[in-house]
Length: 374
Image 1 (cartoon, rainbow, N blue to C red):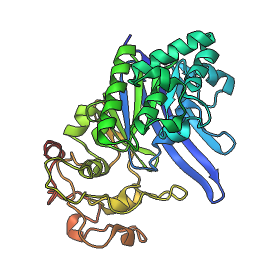
Image 2 (cartoon, helix red, strand yellow):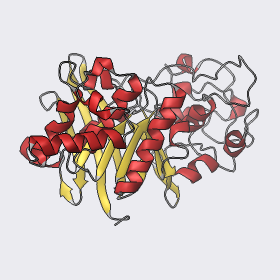
Image 3 (cartoon, helix red, strand yellow):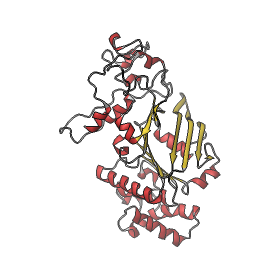
Image 4 (tube, rainbow, N blue to C red):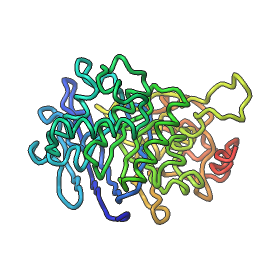
């Protein structure tokens, strides 16, 4: 049944009412996901990844949240749906693995009770049937001595085992769509690989669709079919995974890739951080939200927000001067972007095209394909 459209999100906007005003956490996001496929959502902390996934699930507090747009699961509109309707979808159709299992698991409930609860509520299993299913799930996710762990409390398990328990709970009722929100956060590299391999195997066995939310491009490089890059609540690039790494267009995507450590680098090589901070979403900038941190910023970037345009089938980006352009500006070389933002001028000098044009030649910058192959 792979290929059936399960999830459709169109022009989704999410804002929170705060004492300082309305915070625009997600702005005009659209995406689709078919059964059996994996979509990666990548971005820094605060880029809107978790808010987007929780909005899709219907888990955001309604009292202080405004949500507009459309979220359709298997053709049915679920954005702002009544809780009774959403409860029929949770666990059995859509499930979620939350970021931190230590805070997501109930510290005063035994592991077994937390796994069997959705089984008894949604699938109406008896106590013995639910326990048998829970033990089978613990074995499937690689928990050693499942009978002993069934009666354990969360604090008695390691971080990796707690995350495996979270996966068991999410998969208990055989959902068709799995939202994995930073499923490897706080785990060492070896355990991360084990968890991701486990998710991949279970997804293949159950023909699930999966949304994998992470801040690490390396996590999604070999485990997704398509990637969405988010920044300041906006989708700034979207492409099939192989296309994104071969011909990325958005400077923010390039910056994320360059910030990753590389095995080929000598010991004690300093990581290349993305300078500056994301914008204040209470007062979003008029132009490109990445302009203050972009090394290729031009005057037009400060003044106009670039739309998300499709450069090739399936590959969209939001940038006035994409990396893939035949002619594009070189890195800014004068004042700090934050200093020039007050008057809307570019941080580059006139020879780099402050009139908004795109002079040829990006000096000192390798092509994205060369970066990936390094």
